[in-house]
Image 1 (cartoon, rainbow, N blue to C red):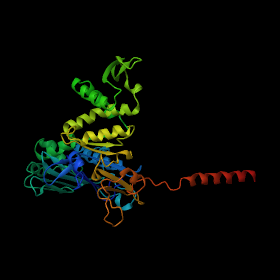
Image 2 (image 1 turned 90 degrees about the vertical axis):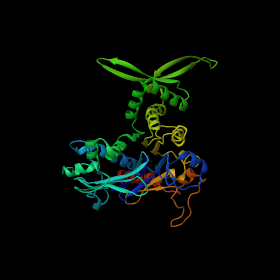
Image 3 (image 1 turned 60 degrees about the horizontal axis):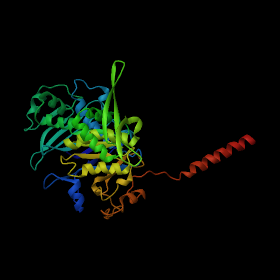
Image 4 (image 1 turned 135 degrees about the vertical axis):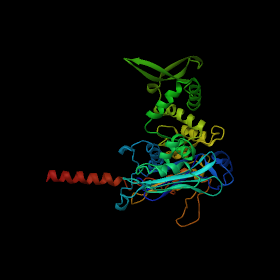
Length: 430
C-alpha cells in the first residue's frame, strides 16, 4: 500500500510536494470504519483519495509523477536507457530550475514493513538515490547514493557485491540493477512492488484498459465477475461476451453486450446480443472497460491511479466506484484508489473524509500547490478548519477552498470584439 509520495521540480511542481494517504485523526466514526485501513496502533491509511482542481492546475501532473517514478524504476532494468525512457521534466517557467534534477520519493508497505525509496535524476545522470526500511520503530539505511558514490548499509548485503563490481550505472538506478541481478531479497521486493502494485489508467483514453477487459472476458471465471459488476452498475446489460471475427488472415475480437428483450407487457421473452461499441453510450462503454482493471485491483490489493476518472461517467456511477474501494466488504485486500476528477458531486461528506479530498492550484508563477481539505484553513493565518458536515461542493464552487478556474470578466471579450468590428467599419466607410 502507498503511504506517501513526494515530487520536486517535475513539470508544474517546482517545490517539494507531498501527497499523503495517511489518515488524519478526524472524528468521523462511520467513515473511519469504512474508508480507513488500520495498519497498526501508529498508522492508518486511506482507501481512496480524490484530487480536484481547475484545468491545467497540475492534477494530472501529480499522477503522472507517480507513474514516471514507476516507469523509470522499471526502465532502468534495461541494458541501455533510451532517450524516451527519461523521466526528468523540470519546472519550465524559471531559469534556475531547468538544469536542476527532478526528484521522486515513495513511502509504502510490503508485507507489513515500511520502505522509503527515492531518487533524483537530471538529463545526464542519477544524482542521488536512497532506500530505507522501518522493520521496527527505527528507520534503517539500506543504501544511499550521491552520483556514482554508493554507501551500502549493513543489512543490505545483496547490494555489496554489485557495488564492488564498479559497474557503470551513471544513468541507471542502483535498486533496479541489484533487483534484476539477484531476483530475490529486499531490492527485488521493492522493484516488484513498483512493477505489480501500482496500476495506471486514464479516463480519457480507454484503449489499454478496454483491451485488458476483453482479454479477461475470454476467461469464464473473470467473465462472470465482470458481467456481475457491470450489470449491477448498468441494469440494462444482462451479460457480456467476446466474438471472434475472421477477416482475411487475422482474427478480430468484438465485444458484445447482451440485453433482455421484453414484450408489450414488459415480460422478458428472449435475449439478444449487440456490438457494444455501436450500441452502448460512451459512459457504459467506459464502465465496461474499467470493470477488468477495477476487479483486478480490488482482488489483489493494488493502488490504482486514475486520471480524469469521471470523464463520461454519470456521478452516481462514479460514486459507486469510489464506494467499491471505501467498503471493507468489496475491498477486503486493502486496494487504494487515487483519482483526479472534476465532478463536484463527489465532494460529499457522506462519501469522502476531509483528508480524502485534495486540491491542486496554480499560482501566478505557474507553480502547482497541493493541499488537503483536512489541512485547509478558512482564514489566512487563522485556525478555523473546515467542518466535517460542511457543504463541500457548494463551498468549493463558491471559491472558498480555492483551486477553481479564474475566468475574469468574460463579457469584456465580446465587448472588445464589438469595438474592433466597429472600428473596422468606420475605416471602410471613411
